[in-house]
Image (cartoon, rainbow, N blue to C red; front, top):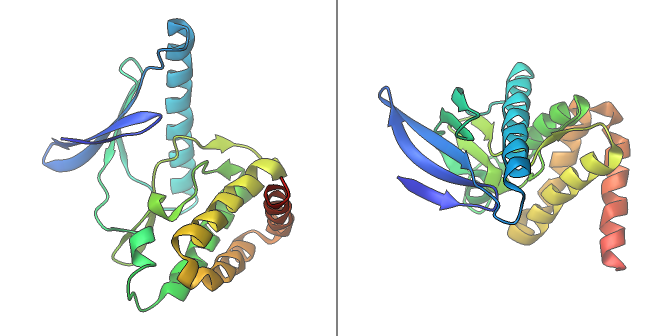
Length: 202
């Protein structure tokens, strides 16, 4: 069953060996040279899989990868049941403060190891019971550059500002959790503020 088509991939919900799975297929870009397009799609799939495996080693929950098909530019992975964190923060969930702290703590672990998510919004986080999952690292990259990590954090702040304005003060909990797992992250937070001020005056 087709779920959605994004800028980078088509997402299909299927069944495999009795399990619900997601098939994520990188879409062709007609404006690119076919050989270059093939190389780029293959490279980005490899990067996404690598980042997901590294996250798992760090104790960060991401979907289990069942199969990678570089010829078909496809990743088959676990379908994670649960609520989007975007919806949880807009609900009467009793412990949003702890959830926001955990979000920051997990993002801090990623950034400490030079993993930028690339699309760090509450729509790309799933709460399954008490377990927080991060999904869709298709725009992610390995980088220790302050600018790249600062943009990642800035995206999350913007998500809180636009989608969760009623609980925007909880973003401070995100930053508190972030610094707990990544003490050196204070430089990234300063870069985030710098990026924010650039946007304000352009």
